[in-house]
Every structure is written in structure tokens, then in C-alpha cells.
Image (cartoon, rainbow, N blue to C red; front, top):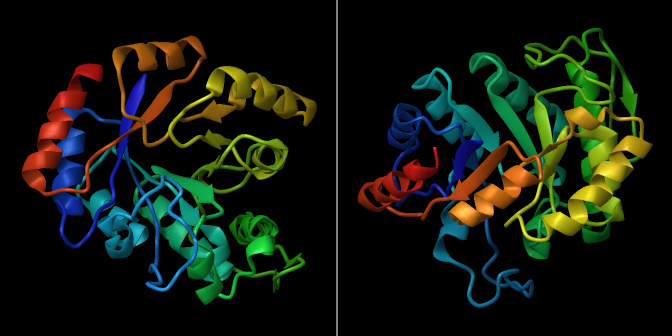
Length: 281
């Protein structure tokens, strides 16, 4: 089983270059970074985990800049977002960022897609909360048009793009309905999420990895009903605090990659956590 990590990198934590080098030297599979552009101080949206919102949420580094640094100092380390709030981006700009990072890293990028939890953050980006899922879906379709081998126009509910010359292209070739880098969608199990996964993704990024015994067979059924190759479905439990029993359970479910959670801390604490997690490699 491949073991990757995620961490809230901030202006107060270990630096991306140092962390990436240490991950590759130890044999970890990848580095996934979250995204928050800002956290409005005056907000009514509760923190999903309960209690006060942790300090690191408002100090998060831009994931694409940080992953670009990580890509430059590694050769094999996977690079991913967990997750990109696609609805909060201009899709033409985002398509260029993603394709550039994937191209420069030799195809090592995984696009984790999410729909967010912070209503006020999304509103500042002009996103109507009730539209965020369909807006994200529309923007993914527009990006696929820009990533197509031939100039391809797109006209959607929320945006459009003319047939265009748009390079570089993501390294991975289209597979079924999916184009672009490996794409995983995060979120809680349910019909809407699973419909999005089967339509335009390679798989699921379930945060915490709970309830997979019940939900994974449902996703596999929906996936097969949509005509997708059962062997192609990827499920990557995300932000997991691992134990031997938990990882053994994932292996029994056919899961091949897990993303474990690192503390948002300085070098000494983060490297200590890596040493502890190394037993699972």
C-alpha cells in the first residue's frame, strides 16, 4: 500500500522544499495539500469538526505554488491537492496552473476536487452556495475542453470558452470520460457525490476514511452501472490517522493508497511524525 501525506503548510510550519525532500528520501508516495484562500473573520459557518476553527486554516499556503517548489526538488514524489475548491477559481486560469504543474513534474499531479464547507469564503468568490456543486462540475468540463488534444469549444451553464490553443497539456491521456491529471473527488458518500465521481473523475477521496465497508460497494455499483471499468476505480482515504488494523482493513477492501495526516508544525515535530509513520511503508 502506498502511503502519502497531507499537511496544512503555512507561514509557520516546515517549508515545502524541506518536507518534499524528506518525504522522497524516506519513500513516501506523495504530498497532498489543502486550499483556503482566506477565512472571513465574521462568519456563521461552523467548523465541520466542531469547536474553534484551527489557526492553520487562515494561514494556508497556496497549494500550487507550494507543490511547484516540491516538484522542483523531487523526482518521484506524487503531488496532489486535497482539495482544490474548483468553484472558487477562474477555470481558464486553473486549467493552465494544473496543466503546467503536471507537465513540469512529469505527470505526478493528482487533482483532488472538493466543494467546500465555508459559505462566507465561497461567497467572497462570487459563488452561490446552492450552485457550488454544479458550478464545480461545469468548470471541470470547461477545463477538459482546454486539455483536449484538438481545440475544443465549451458552452456551459456557468461559463464558456472558445476553441483554443492551450498548452501545455496534462501528461495523462484521456480515459473514458475523464481528461487531465488523475482526478479524485472528496466529500461524504451519497448519490450526488457518486454521480460526479462516475461522470468526470478517476475515483473518490473520502476524508477520514470512515464507513467504507458500507459505502464502497455502493460506489462500485454506481461506477459499473455508468459503464466505467471496475478495475479503474481508485479510492484513496484522506487525512487518516493510521493504525495497523486500519490499514489492514483498507487493504482488504482493495485500497492501494492512503493519505495520512501530518501536524501543521515546525520541522522537529513534522519529521518526528514522519519517522513514526515510516513503520507503515
